Length: 147
Figure (tube, rainbow, N blue to C red):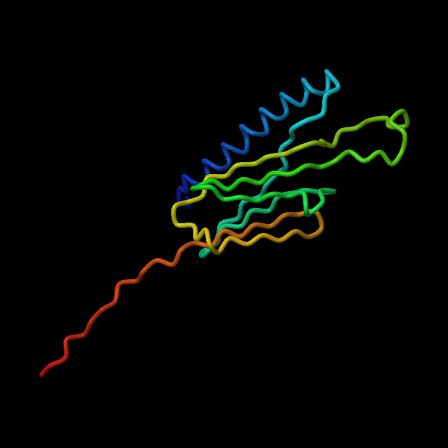
């Protein structure tokens, strides 16, 4: 039997993601029935490393300039919009499943996040946000020298 370290932050984030997807799927069915396009939630992978947490958000066909990333207090907010560009007439579409419109994701930052060091990059439709951890002050041992 292998013991596994319990990580409440990871479990909480997974639960938040599942709830967001459940709500989004329910609302998307309602919107689909009504023919309305609106808010969608891009999928996110969260990777925990020794000195940082990395978020990888799938944003295909989203223009980089239309992605807004903000940190307010302990909340990271990612907003933007994927526009539906008609490259063919609408009557030629057989099915449209990919969500379009505005999106917004909120993440509670761990207390040990170095907010000044947060970095973001965007490549091949994937937004990558690196949340570095603050360096912990290590105790320093002082040696008493004889006189």
